[in-house]
Amino acid sequence: MERVLITGVAGFIGSHLADYFLNKEYHVIGVDNFITGNVRNIAHLKDHPGFKFIEHDVTNPLYIDEDLHYILHFASPASPIDYLKIPIQTMKVGAMGTHNMLGLAKAKKARILVASTSEVYGDPLEHPQKETYWGNVNPVGPRGVYDEAKRYLEALTMAYHRFHGLETRIVRIFNTYGPRMRLNDGRVIPAFMGQVLRGENLTVFGDGSQTRSFCYIDDQVEGIYRLLQSDYPEPVNIGNPEEISIRDFAEEILKLSGRDDLTVTYKPLPVDDPKRRCPDITLAKRILGWEPRVSRSEGLKNTFEYFKSLPAEELYKTEHKDFSKYIKP
Image 1 (cartoon, rainbow, N blue to C red):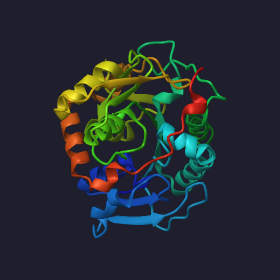
Image 2 (cartoon, one colour):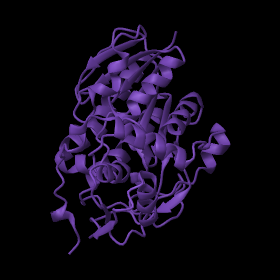
Image 3 (cartoon, rainbow, N blue to C red):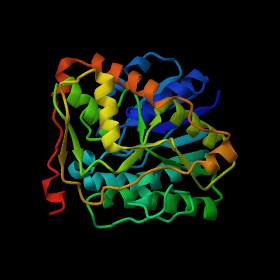
Image 4 (cartoon, rainbow, N blue to C red):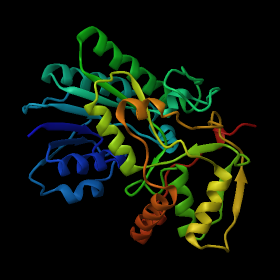
């Protein structure tokens, strides 16, 4: 059996990747330090014979005795709430963590796929965003710690590919959602669903005209797997090109929840919040034969049912939410 190492395995996407590879009868070594991951996401794998877990911070070197065929580097904070709480750790895992994983892949002669993000495009001046677009990023803004960490991750990965001949893959992940997201991590889907479950009005930043496109986790994981198995070393967008404004999306969530007693409230837009975000997935269609299959209505229903199933105390856990100093005057 082939063996894959997944960093950030207790995170939202990482835990789903572990399930996917185990279902395909790979051996999986999962690595996480739980800085943003949740042990609950991998608790069901505790006694799985094909799963091994290592608690470790990948910004420190990692030594693995077993042979490795693949490495998937998904360790990173991934929400604006996290950037504010742990900005230095965010940059370190993108830089030092990536360096360590590339070194491990080189030592093990393993193929490595690194998780990049649509945030490398910043507040884009091109729409939809193609992989050839270089982006419009503010390197010193509050989001810069994440944006630039991921841009560095891509550059370092391509350097290892070109200089060492390492087999590398880069996935640029657009907004992904589904079960196991953190309810209070500040991203729009868990934020809206948490608010309706608490009986609160939905908070939209700006006038709500900014757009996002949402890819369900099952589609995202399938796209990642196909990219890993491809022979394409440069970045590939994996996301859903079905675009919707945040204002209209808030109305969708209210309709899904059945809470006609709630409404939408508006607050100032945070600095550098992208106005439009939508992937061009022409490349993924052509080289991977991939495109999303799960409708937004189906995916949102599954996600809402997951959040409703969480213990009541989860609804009222608070994260650091002080965005005030990052609001435009």
